Length: 347
Ligand SMILES: NC(=O)c1ccc[n+]([C@@H]2O[C@H](COP(=O)([O-])OP(=O)(O)OC[C@H]3O[C@@H](n4cnc5c(N)ncnc54)[C@H](OP(=O)(O)O)[C@@H]3O)[C@@H](O)[C@H]2O)c1
Image (cartoon, rainbow, N blue to C red):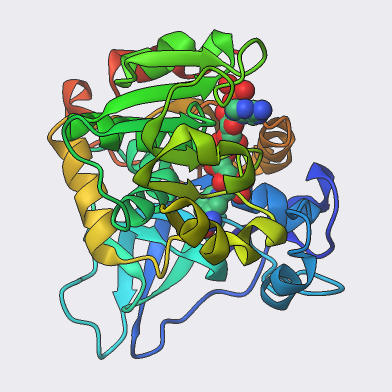
C-alpha cells in the first residue's frame, strides 16, 4: 500500500510517499481504507522533535530515541472499514468511520489498523470524510479536557491559541453550551473565531490578557506560554486551568499550583475515548460545530503539508486527502459550511 513514511527525524522533507507492506487486521482490529487524515501539531512535533522543554526523554519513549518507532504519521483518520478481525463487533466492511489513532499513528497511508479499544466511531453520513477528519484531533482533545472542568452556560472561558485545531474546537464546543468565550489569537484570525462563537477576541501581539484585570472561570492554554505561574491571577478561585500545551516544569508544579491558588489544573486529556469522538461527530452532525479546514493536500504532497504546518500558523486543520471520497451525499449536506469554504485555501 501507499504510505507517507519518515525513517529519520528532521524537516518536512524527511517524509516521502512509498509503497510498504499491506496490513492484515488481528482478531481485535479493523482495517480501514483511509479517505482523509490531517497533519497535526503532534505530527509536526513527532517528526521534528520540537518537544516542549523537559519532555524530550518521555516523548522519545513513545516516538523513538534514534529513529522513528512508527514510520507512518497521522493521528486521525476518516475512512471506510475494509475488513474486520474475528472478535470485532459493531463494525462491518463498508461502514464509514472516524478514528483517533493517537500515538499509535498510521493515518497517512491508504490503509490503517484500528484497535477495537481505540476511539473509533461511525461517521455521520452527512459529513464528508475531509470534514470529519478535520474535527477529530482538535475535537476529541478539547472534549477530553472539557470533561474534566465545569463549562456550561455563562461560564467564562479564555482560549489561548484559539485559531488552531484544538483551540477552534474549544471555542466551538464551549460556545455550543452557552459559555462566554474569549479567544486569543492573531488579529487576522479574529473574524474566524468570532464566527465560531467567540464573544471577545484578544490579539496577543498587542494585548497581554493577564495584565488587564479580567478574570475567567476557565483558561485553556493551547500555545504553551500561559502556565499557571503566569495566569493564576486571571482565574477565579474554584476555576480551572487546562494545560493542553505545557512544558515539564508546568506539569510537575500543577498539583502544587492548584492547591496554592484554589483552582484545578488539568494536565492531560486522559485516554482518548470513543464516547468523546461520538459526541464531537454528533455536534458536527447537528451543526453545533463545523470543520475549519485551512488547506487540503493530496497524500503525494505530504512534505508540502508538513512545511505549511511547521509555520505554526495554520487555522484549524490541514487535511490530507488520501483517497478520493465516493460522493454519497449532495453537496448541500457536506458538513462544510460557507465559513469553511472561505477559510479553505485562503492563504
Ligand atoms: N496534551 C495533549 O495531549 C495535546 C493534544 C493535542 C494537542 N496538543 C498540543 O496543543 C497545541 C495546540 O495544538 P493545535 O493542533 O491547536 O496547534 P495549531 O493548529 O498549530 O494551532 C496553534 C495556534 O496557536 C496560535 N498561536 C501561536 N502563537 C500564539 C501566541 N503567542 N498566543 C496565542 N496564540 C498563538 C496560532 O494562531 P495565530 O496564527 O492566530 O497566531 C495557531 O493557530 C500544540 O502544542 C500541540 O502539541 C497537546
